[in-house]
Picture 1 (cartoon, rainbow, N blue to C red):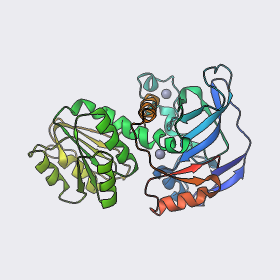
Picture 2: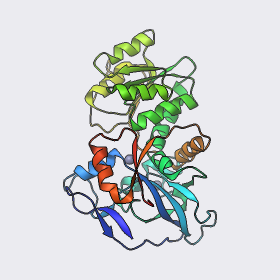
Picture 3: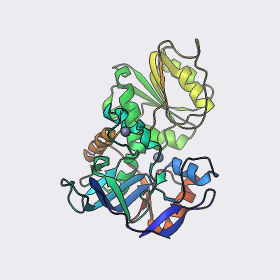
Picture 4: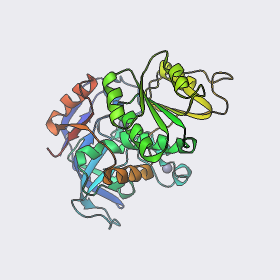
Length: 341
Ligand SMILES: [Zn+2]
Ligand SMILES: [Zn+2]
């Protein structure tokens, strides 16, 4: 089969011919339909040797949707041709982290499909049954970004739900891919007022169309404006999907006492955690990815027609161009490769 693979660090990925994988016991063989491209992929493409702990080559693609082609021994609850979404993070299902419901932090999840192991930019992919979620009639291309962008933002929103009581405010910094989903999840799950913050006016407009009550430019005055909007108190929750020095500092300065700040974006920024630097009894946490249960819930929202899922679709043969345009900032929504096109 044809697969789009990272073959050498620092070199462009290329199409290669590789064997079709076979499903073991408990696995499902998928005929791939759609793969969402993610900023993490761009980090792989730009990385030199030694940056990531992965051996090459591997097939790219971790936002995967496929159709059931074959079932491994012991799997009896999926129909041939059924479309399924694949969890973005691989997990063992047996360790205490998985058993406590945090399979996105499984110690075995440091490598998985599309990051160290073969991912979905190929004609076929093998996945454990436990890690796939039936999509029903959802369009595979529009559903692919739910597996990471949609579910990761959902995981963060779920975590801050207890803070977002009636009358509360949630600030979302960076309302591109993940943040745009976060705005939608907040409106669907909470009574909070949602304040979108972004440097880009177009993304601020989109955030308002997605349900944000307010949209503010991202600059040195953002935190002061959040305080004005909240009678000086600050926001109950601040979700930073950018993660630079500037946004992390804005996040801490925008939160209120007993609030919560999530540093989601892997921008490598820092902010001082000290007396006077963090609102009193404010939770600060660094989440990553989503659980399989999160993906089930996000797919349920999408199947109910509650989510807007904008994508730009590229055929499989133009995967390289899709990454190129994504990296150049030319894709306004989510870039998705239709593997079966
Ligand atoms: Zn990703
Ligand atoms: Zn585990």
